[in-house]
Length: 397
Ligand SMILES: [Fe+2]
Image (tube, rainbow, N blue to C red; front, side, top):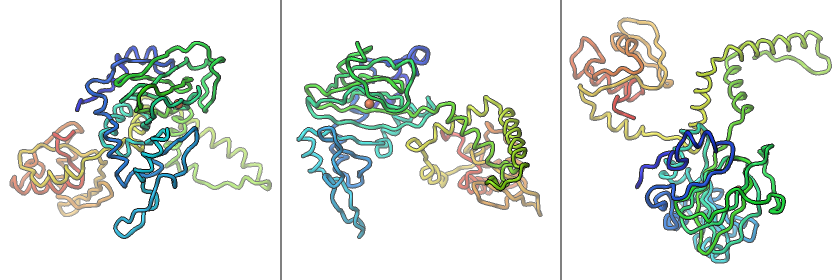
């Protein structure tokens, strides 16, 4: 399995951002290294369709331009005494596919861990929510008429071929879905028979049309939901007012309101503007980017493994401060209250002093966490605190 990188999709990042991103469609032939079926294959989809856990809305079937009702390809299964009503019936799906239906797996990054790793490359770099949809189209299937979508797309051809026509986005970008006529669009900017390993990038609003060719086609469509300035500003606004006491009063604004309500309203607007102006741009943009990277469909964790690994923590193992914020209380009889991840614990004050002195990038041996006691006792204390998230292993990613 190849370790994919963001550049496998976009090529030279400087060129991508200067010439294509948010501007015009891009085609990269043979962009994906290795066998593109390592990302997702028909074989994997055969296995997935047989897994009882894959249910609508994660799978959809479209026949002759209309969606097939779920009852047409699902059945009941009893799991641990409980009836699950919409489990996919593989034989029905196969029958529909034979009849010419397109099968779509939605948000596949929520089901297949390897795909999540793949789409995370994009969420991380672009600081956006990503969603991946796999389209399986049978041979010679007539495609969709030209249209555009309100999201940026990366198309990765995985098996078979598909014929694409792409036009440059119109000068006035329409974020809502729209339909076009081939006559109105004229000559396409890109016309290509997409082969396994080829990648297309479509900025939102790019008119496109696609149709399968001589073989069944499997492609992955990775959607990036752009956050417009209005979305970002809204997130900034929410953060600013979240803890602002001055916006928590409840005014009466109905027809019997007092004239003073208007001046109070203006005061509040001025207070809000002052808060907005005090926002430090670089820090806030970083915060917004982090929010974008951690939306549904891209979270990752390794706490089970990390916690289990702690059982073998030795005195020489290096620790650093965990990511959870810490709150220190007052010293009382040699112990200081520490709040972490909602836990309140009384910790020997020498440990708290060690913690307070430890810089964000510094690390410390487990045996030194509790100064003045023997190494084994310090290591035990470090182990307990690491389990709670106060420390983390310095070698951990
Ligand atoms: Fe589309």
